[in-house]
Length: 86
Image (cartoon, rainbow, N blue to C red; front, side, top):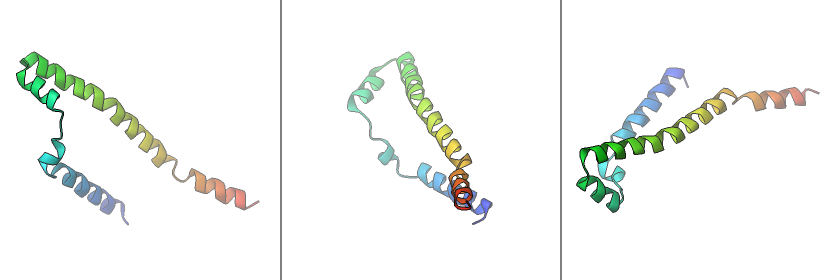
C-alpha cells in the first residue's frame, strides 16, 4: 500500500472519530457537571486548564512511545536475519 494511501485512510479514520455521535463523548460525571454549571467564569477556566493539564502529558507520552516503536520497527527483524546467517 502506498504512503499517500495510508495517510488518506488515517485521515478518514480521524475525521470519522471526530464526526461520531456527540452523546457518546458526553459521558461525564454528574458532580463535575453541576459544579461547572454553578461555578464562576474563573472556576470554569481553571477546570478547563486542569483538564488540559491532565490530558496533555499522557498524550505526549503515548506519542513518544509510538514514535520510538515506529523508528525501531525493523531492528528486531534485522537482528534475526544477521543471527540466522551464522
